[in-house]
Image (cartoon, rainbow, N blue to C red; front, top):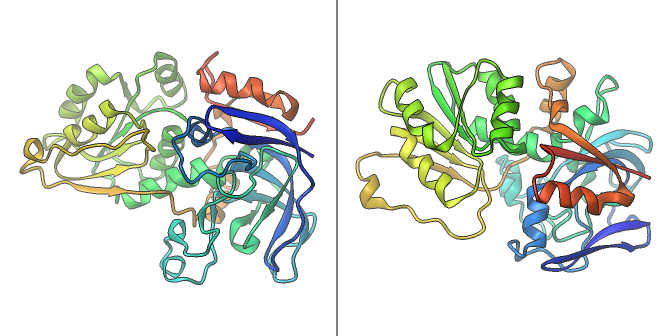
Length: 345
């Protein structure tokens, strides 16, 4: 089968690999019906993910159909349509029992697919701990609707959840890329008093204005003024940082009111520094880390109920044979791209 393979930093190519087989009793083999490209894939290619294994098949955003299951799989059967979770987790260790599945202590725990073991930019994928890592897609939900559930949508849902948003809050999202938009989609469920989205790219600002008319959309130059105008106590009550630059990291703590929560979702290319003398007295709470993708089933129910819709984020479609073109488009942010959808040839 064809598989987009990470060769070394700066280089990936389409290779031929054997179709995966069941290795462990709790494995499932999934036939990919749609996948996508994530910014984390670009980070791997750029050499910013040291744990990424050369030779691995890229891709961790995918939906498909169960092809076969191991004898230890109890919840799934061949023919089931499923969304694949970005996290691999055993469900039994200390961290899994507490809902922190990103920190699963299994050797494949956390972000494995498309990083440390073969992922989904291919035709078939082996999913360890399939009962945990695969979510049944309701019959009323299409592949388009379910595609982002297992990664960027569950990331946005997790970010909003740990930010402890209330209806009285002014909430700032920094970054209107795919994950920022998924965070916005989930934030709407909390009905905060004010939502502000700060985005550098004019095209993305127009996208938010078109699809979310009740949201205040600003450029970085206007962000702090907007937060001070709408926030009642000297800034935003909650800040969710999804952009991942030096400037956006600094803006996150600057825009927060004293005693606010600042949630860091972004993956940075280099270390960030908190200038504690400048922040003295703000008493901020920072929440950081990788997504704990435990709520995929909840999200599929919300999609089926019409409360979440990420289909407008799919702006471009490519067959697997043209995935290199999709990478160029997405990596260079051409033609107003938000997300690509990759389907079998």
